[in-house]
Length: 412
Image (cartoon, rainbow, N blue to C red; front, top):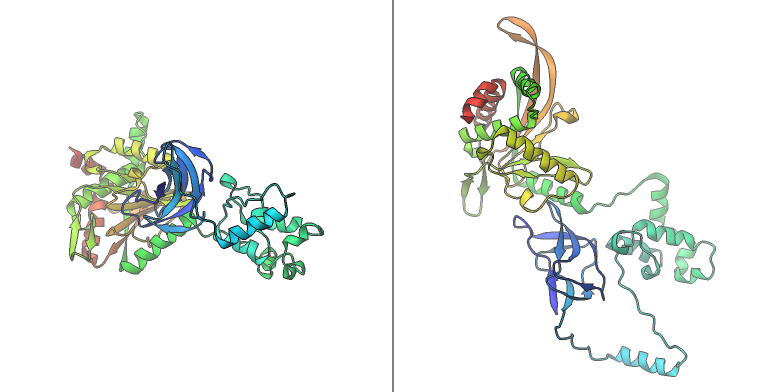
């Protein structure tokens, strides 16, 4: 019998939430066929079958969070020996005797495997409903909260079906909690990526002493260069310039391309510059990574950023796409943000947010002119770096972005 276990599918993960199964007991599966969908702190992944065979048992229910190494599914490999039959228990023998006394009952009703989250089961249990009576409408036949509520509603006035409901529920087919929810509130499941994001945010905020430094950049010349490139047929996003400028600034201040290893008592400076891109999706925040930015041109970075964003929105990021970031940026300017105190992508040392660019009156050479001004905010780990170093870093970043000719010189 083969055990399909939750294994580490990226960056030392320790646990994952079972979203849903693509198979059920009795199904014939082929090697590498997707069996189960798992949500980790960074991504949704599918675990494949290790061999051809038959699904014998699903051990962990969807909606459950389990640690790496937990057995999820048992598969009888094709051509393998069948699992030994269990010895009959006293209860089984008694059932057989009753069956003998009732020869007319030719078949025995077998309970199907029910896919439902623990909270969904609780709703059914609290309302005295046997959940295996309900037809699920979710993925792979999964029973949702609303499936349970619809089933309960369908029993109203049905005397024959009312036997499935506990006597205490006959007085009120909805629990007091559900009745209150229907009147004055709506609930949203706190699971999947949202739950993983919450864990990461709490871990970061309660582990790292955050300090946020704000800076103002005047990027009029950069905007002119962007327009010139567009007119020449090279449409390059501002974000690509930001990524490259961050990498070049990190080369001057490598303490921010590092992380604190408390167990070994050292700060580990990373030699590669892998920039994470905080990306908003329908499922929540995710951070794809541009690897080895020091080896890439601004145009290459632009194309890779577009591909990362596309894959993130389509939920097609691989484990490799999400691994190895050494510094993270968040470009929230297009969303209209003018300032924030970002939370660091643990265990990194810093995160830099780029905010909305606005036209403002500025003074240049004693004259008032209109310029393009943008705020940036940088949260950093005060255990690893001091405020003066953070200011020096953003000053270098400003120097590169405010004078894009210097940015190009650095690339030669």
